[in-house]
Length: 75
Image (cartoon, rainbow, N blue to C red; front, side, top):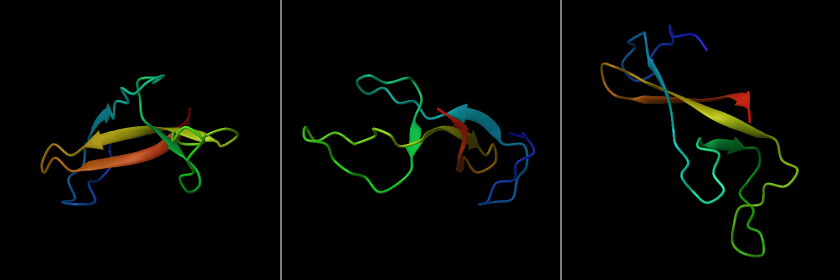
């Protein structure tokens, strides 16, 4: 993804790339976006079986600190 992204809050370009960490049990170290409404499994966790997942890429505006999130990479 290009670093020439524009902040949707203040319009600044040159957003800083980063990531949103997922530190939960069985985590891969980064947050994921999963298509569809949240469904709970028998033990209360989110059902993910068979659903496509996407890594969440985060960009921070150096001017106003607004975060822009994109689900652009298949996890």
